[in-house]
Image (cartoon, one colour):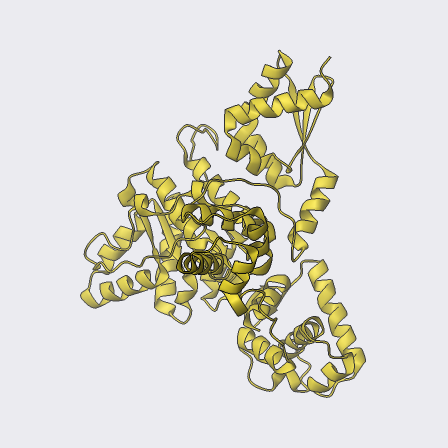
Length: 481
């Protein structure tokens, strides 16, 4: 007599055959809880996003797999599981979380952006999608899962064989923005999306370029009196994918042109996806452009965690023919804690060192090859470093944080600075208070509690004409330290 575990295992096997191993591992393995009882299959998920996505994308395959195992049609029920919800929330809030297993056979997690040098009078600024990275080569983990899922969902919604949004099969388009520091895979996702869309649409209708290219072509079109041609090309594109969007800071005319382009593409039901170093509300753009992008989907990509670094190292080592033991891979993943490019650089350093000295790659050789780069000493952060970082990000004039002003534009940044001082230094409340304008220890304690409360409530506040997410703002300031 088959047990409940046998039924679930058989269902998982049948479902994997229908949707593929990669998609099963991404969306079901360790992301769902499956219960089979009383001719009903219940699938627990961590949140509403997962529920809607699984039900809409894999509903038919789930029903077929369940019927195949049971021998007759089964009732399927999706629910938000409290345990999964709490675990997923803790993962998102943790600085170093343990990711779920998402296995992909990949070449590289990052492909460098290749700017175009074409003139404005030719089909410029887009790269051949076939010359791009592929989404199948992207390694997904907790640090990039939501951004990757958003891109996959976009591609799935455009496939002609999926009736995603009803009979019209015309989904409502909205801008998609992916943001995060250098070297975490934003360009790879854009190029992979361009390549995937090239399988669905005419490649000439897919424009993939950097914001600098867009700006240069716009300025050249103005100088040559060819704005109408420029607008016709970009606004008739089926998909416009822009990388390094932070380049547009301070370029008002280009921002206005992009805003009108995005509005036109949205009205036509076409695709606009951008990659940026920061959340749109943390970039000094026109308020209208910020609102337009923030009104769409905005997902972060963060530095890879230890498990994702391990898989990146394994994959890249296989590609360059570098034999690494599990012990060496684990050691590198724990020791080199930068972005993907830094991981690649460390691997190449080990590769060249072992080649020159004709030695097998051991943990001791890795330590020698990387020298001081391996396990670098953490930088000592001073109160002046924190003051400069906060002032730089929020564009404050010198001395504001140590002044006596109590207006929000000064007091809120000061509270953030005090919070970061407690986090990144070993100084006492009194020492921090004295630095920030001769305040007493109770002021620093109150500031720390206030910021902690903002973070717990996922709070926002408005400064300098922009709305800031407190957690994102703190992360951005910390990257400046």
